[in-house]
Image (cartoon, rainbow, N blue to C red; front, side, top):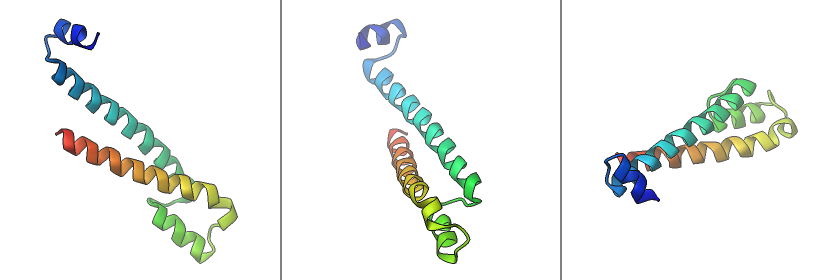
Length: 90
C-alpha cells in the first residue's frame, strides 16, 4: 500500500516515508510543547529545573507538584528526542 500511495503522489517510497516521519515528529512535537506550555503556565516557569527551584524555595508545595514534576521532566526529555530526530531528518 505504501508503494502504491508513493506512485500516486509521484514520489519514491523512501521520500514518502521520510516526509511521513517528519510530519509525524512535527505533530508529536506540537502536542508535547502544548503540554509543556500548560505546566509552564500553571507554575509560572519555563523548565522543570525552575519548578524544582520553586519547590526547594517553598513557593510550591512538593506534594502539590509531585506528579507534575515527573511528567514535566518526561515531556522535556521527549521534546529533546523529537528535536534531535527532526535534525537527523534534515
